[in-house]
Length: 280
Image 1 (cartoon, rainbow, N blue to C red):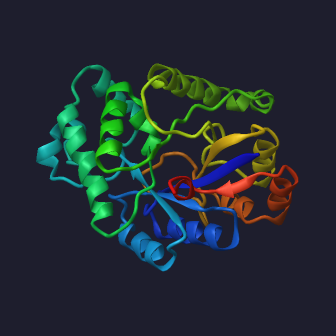
Image 2 (image 1 turned 120 degrees about the horizontal axis):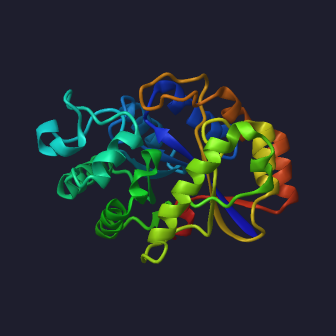
Image 3 (image 1 turned 120 degrees about the vertical axis):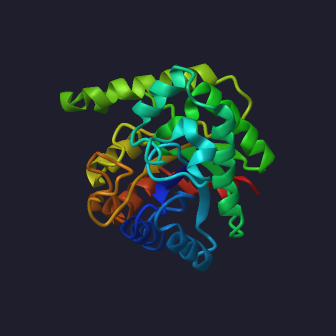
């Protein structure tokens, strides 16, 4: 039997995202969400978490988008002239591969993000990151150490296998290239010792999932093991500067609350679970 973790990224990003995550949890199949410590609506998310103790919570580490938790002067190698994070992973990666990123500053900032969440009494069951920057080898080593230090059991391993349905529309070819790049970094760090799910889906249609696509994903899931499905539900398209793409469409939330999706999960005998349940 397959155990499926459906996890919403960007909890705390905006009011619309928070409300959508709550609805997807209350009336749908969502059981887990990753919290942005530097999100503009972090405190709204904390209120939702306190009112819904069964909602599984992870930390959505970020080194791009928004502002750092620490004073910008203390993390100068990872912020722009305005003292904010760079807007996209590409800009950060350029500095990273040019050895112009201080790993000490990265560790300090990521520690501050985790500690901010813990300070509100929130149990963190898993770690992932905005635009998957935690998968860069040196940053991943830091992430593993942070997980060990703060006793966080799971770390996202965003390696998504290529399926036939991904090849049906040439408009998605650039996404396949991006997926291949992400899988390459997963290959580099695959032998590190850390807890992860057996499989992962959601990058290919990240932020653009609807009911039809979700049904396709479910029909192509593995037969057994533990799989994480990443999603980005929202009530409307969110223009928040964390994402330059058309993200968080209402169709994604609707898919997570659709009865036909539930019927297919039951037909395939897929068990919905969460990271916290696996930590028991």
